[in-house]
Length: 197
Ligand SMILES: [Fe+2]
Image (cartoon, rainbow, N blue to C red):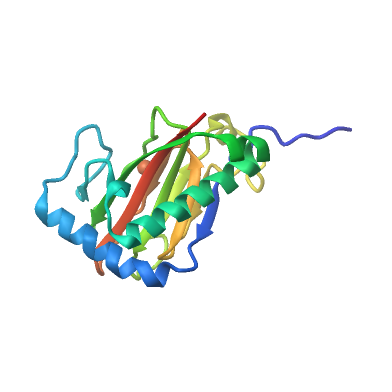
C-alpha cells in the first residue's frame, strides 16, 4: 500500500541566536515609532494594538540590518525545504515588513495575509504569561477534518509558543490568530509577508 500524507502545511520556527544582542534595541525602536505615528489600522485584523506602515527593513539601525539578514537566510532555508534547493537559491524575494506593539488584552483575531506566499513573525519582546496567553494559533486549512477523522492525527489547530528571538514562518494562506495576554510588559513583533518568484 502506498500511503501519502497529502496537504501538509509547512510551519517553521527558527530562533535567532544573536537575539539577545539586538532585541532590546529593536524594542526601543518600535516603542519610539509608536509614539511618533498613529497606528496604521486600515484593512488590518486587530483588537487594539499599534501597527506601523510598511518599510521597516529600510531603516538604517544596525540591529534592523542584522534582522534583515536573518530573515533572508531563514526564508531561503524554508524555500529549500518546501520547494527545492534550486528555487531557494534563485528566487527573487520581495518583503513587505511592518512592526506591531500590543499591550494586555489586545490581540489579532483570525485572518490570513492575502497577496503573498510566505508570512513571518519575529518576536522581539514577549511578556511572561501562562499558556495559552500570547500563543500564535494556526487553524487547519483542511476544514473537513473537523467533521470526523481520528482527532489524534488531524488536529484542527496548532499552537506555537513564541520566545523572544523566534521567527515563525508559514504559508500566507494559513488562517491564524493570537491569544491575548492579560498582564505584563508590551509585546513587540516584526512581521512580514514575502512574495517569491
Ligand atoms: Fe497575521
